[in-house]
Length: 120
Image (cartoon, rainbow, N blue to C red; front, side, top):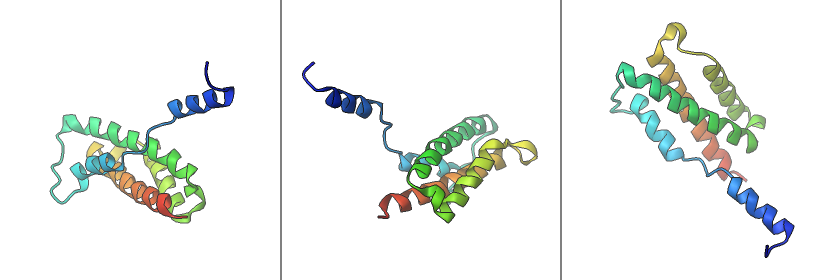
């Protein structure tokens, strides 16, 4: 070992750190449902898209909360709505409508994340 315990611990934390959020990929996924040239997925693809959108929300929510989004009234409302949409399933709305609602939450949380990331 060439470093001190403090150096080694710092390197371990860097290795465990999650990569930054890929907002561009999240927005790209949303465009499949909400974009001006939306090409709605077939029934077999909707389940995969729902899983992808749920994954995006599960990454965005803790990041926003860590950035202080829970203390920001607008971000807190978006986080709360995303939690409600994650806890519910397609139910009577059907899978396509559920996917669209999840996509809208991704759009909102991406916007809050970008706003909070650049604010002092």
